[in-house]
Length: 291
Image (cartoon, rainbow, N blue to C red):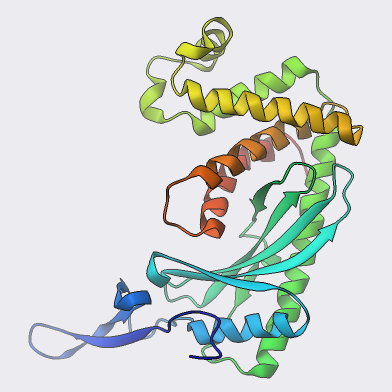
């Protein structure tokens, strides 16, 4: 275990039928001996030592690597630092997440966390159905396979990075007036952030009217206030960077808001998992720009 970047390894025991015969299932234990799954005997669990070997390959190439896990090992992953890169909308720091949901498939997926240096807010970009975002981890992994997987992961990272930068430029290319930006923020909040239990008889139009007339009386008023504060910060950053108001301003304000919600969250999930969950709310923008 001394060379394993993770603090635990999986163990397992067979499960038996009531008649005493061995079944096709087994019980798998993760961190602290907690049961995490009972898969069929043929399902492949990615061992922490195997994913650690991949992490060690990145470390040998000079990358800073941290591990993460969720629910005692139901999900394990690597967080690989790739440093700062220039961008038209503000230089950013990029990290590669290699996430493995250990449900027996042996498949992980790649995602990028983009951290804008001007405002220290970040969000995860992940298109897990794209072929470059998938990574197949073999049943056992040796040093040579670790290097091959590392190269494949870097290739996937570069593909994702290109997608992220193209998306940013497409969003920035759609110039908007401030009233239009506020419309998109309110629409996003109503569709993606407002708890369904609080919508009640509201429609988008009546919610927008309530925001205009009595913003302190709307459901989740404190959250909406945080969103407007995030927009005000982004408008200041636009001035610093010499950017016009655009769809990217709305996108950046929402990522700013979401990242602060993640940071303040009381969830016990790892930061990587929480950011990935929050990023799912950014699909709103997929329909607004074509990349």
